[in-house]
Length: 131
Ligand SMILES: [Zn+2]
Image 1: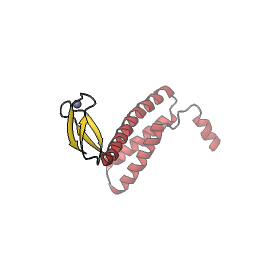
Image 2: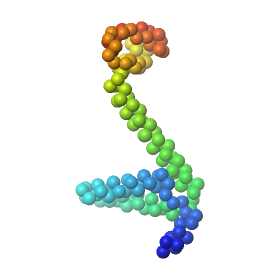
Image 3: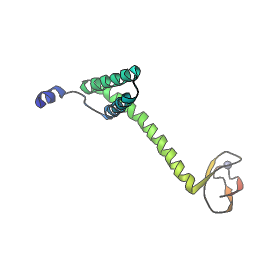
Image 4: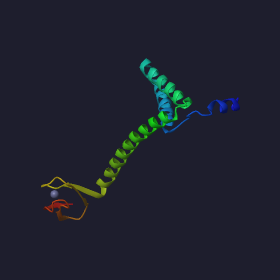
């Protein structure tokens, strides 16, 4: 049985990053489907499973790789966005973010330094703020 399967899988694309994530998505949708009885949700889940199998057994490597690259591109954008948001949240604890009144440049100033003169790195405008 295992040999038969291995022979069957020769030359086939298998699971890539996109495949892995669609598998996670199906698991989430299946669990969600236990609580929300929706034909639409079941349909979507079924379609994703179908697509997952289609891609796994596909012999068109070039096309599948292209799909995976596209997926990774968007996934990385989303990951980068959330990392940036996270960093900004952490920064807000230690830093004060001021906006330069003349050019709108955002300036990060450490908190707890009292009243200080801030020089904008972009337009050299000086203004006084409490940090
Ligand atoms: Zn400025």
